[in-house]
Length: 321
Image (cartoon, rainbow, N blue to C red; front, side, top):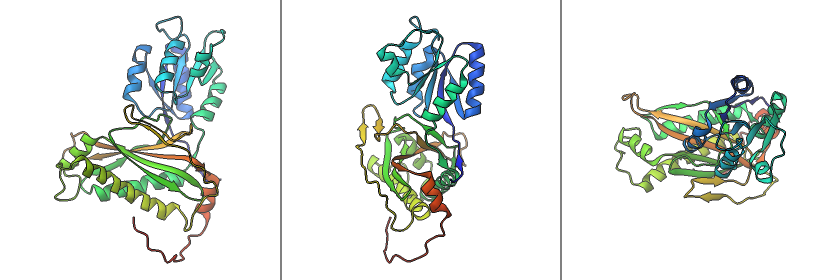
């Protein structure tokens, strides 16, 4: 099997016990979780601020309104049911039906091996080949620089997410299909930040911030098209197809800014910052990229494709992107 990269995932850490807090912080460092410690009071506001989480670590005896934190667990589950909740049990009482539905994984205090197994099975259920992740970051950065030639483009460290909340107001979606994968790629950004970036002169000469929302949509669409073309040239063999032609509905709730691809698998997420080198104090334009392999995912088949000699034969077809 090809070499895979162990990506980080952001988790909300709701823990009050000093000993357990330090134990969990060490645990997160070991397994690749980026912990965001919060109190019970800050838990729900933090969910509203962060749309790219991988899960929640919650202590049963966290000080909350009520005898324990299970009420908070139900609130979190209601708001973001896609996020797995890992409950550190401090009592032996049986959980009710609603509590069991809210808590994806319960573990006994001190048994971090049980927690580790649950995290690996839930948050890190998919592994991504290093060559694929590095290649996607490289070709995406190049495509963004082509569309925004006067911006300094920086790719943040990739991570995995379980959240299904859309970032910003402008998003694009394009299908990815090869012998080793079937799914989608998304680009997401904030409309006002994209407009501000154009005002600052990120784009080509003569293209400023007077673009209407349709033209801004087209700008992100053309960027997506460039990335797709480069992805196809690098990672999809000629005449590629998959034997699995399953389809699932994509559900979009615009009011809640929610999108579901019918899969509980984690998504590969990379954030790109576009900064103005002439104005270092200006907030960057952020473009969020997600790759969702919800229909077919086989790192083993990717390894076979990557190891095979390139097919230089001419198909005789003219392709336009």
